[in-house]
Length: 256
Ligand code: BV8
Ligand code: ZN
Image (cartoon, rainbow, N blue to C red; front, side):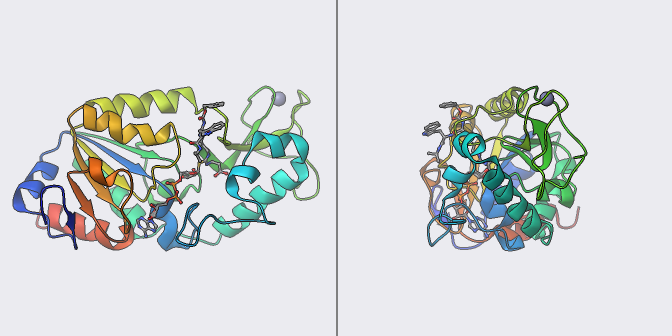
């Protein structure tokens, strides 16, 4: 495995293991691929994007559909919530949750909205694109914990009159300012940046690895496929997160 080459498995050379172990500030950046082994379809999977009623996520998770057909918009999210309620975190999520207390400073930055990192025990985390399990008002932005009626039958409205919607960032919407600021600060100052399961196709999230690289961080990628980030990575671990991350944990922390 060369310095910038792809390792066929987890056989990291000694100095990498030591450099990872001695990292003082770690950022783990995840995308849909970390949830693939929990059975959650990725956005740009091998056979192209997932579709629902013939539409792609970028059309379904859009302010245009929210405005033009809130009923279909809510049905798309209820369909996904129904599916996500049947899946569990996989060993990849669990490994990341265990790393949190192993480093002086650790932040998980996820693009995912499925809530599986929290379910696996991650606490030091920012959700750049929100969380499908939360609701908020489209007008006053109030977080709405409980809905008076079943949204499957009755579109939910806030006391202010605004439509209530899942608290996710739709394509064309800006990211939550505090989450984005925390993610950028962490990427600028970390000395280890591990990217797991993302095609780096969605911006501005995909800028974070470049920010970390410019800051001089050691860059590791975990992905079965090559991505635009592979060229930025000091090492690319080619494989599934659910297999590689537990092995990486063993290489790093066995015997501690
Ligand atoms: C923004 C929540 C400023 C919703 C998501 C035109 C108009 C407006 C904006 C744009 C535009 N053109 C471009 C943009 C910017 C746009 C964008 O980047 N579009 C892309 C598609 C080109 N971005 C935005 O709109 C963002 N906002 O720019 O605001 C602005 C405001 C107004 C006007 C202009 C600009 C907001 C983006 C957030 C969108 N919301 N999710 C919902 O889910 O319903 S993003 C969505 O995609 C998910 O959150 C997902 O995480 C994310 C990114 O995808 P990935 O995570 O990378 O997943 P993907 O399937 O692509 O890849 C999976 C990878 O895993 C693959 O590499 C695969 O090999 C790997 N893998 C597979 N199995 C495994 C694995 N890895 C490891 N182990 C395995 N087992
Ligand atoms: Zn409101």
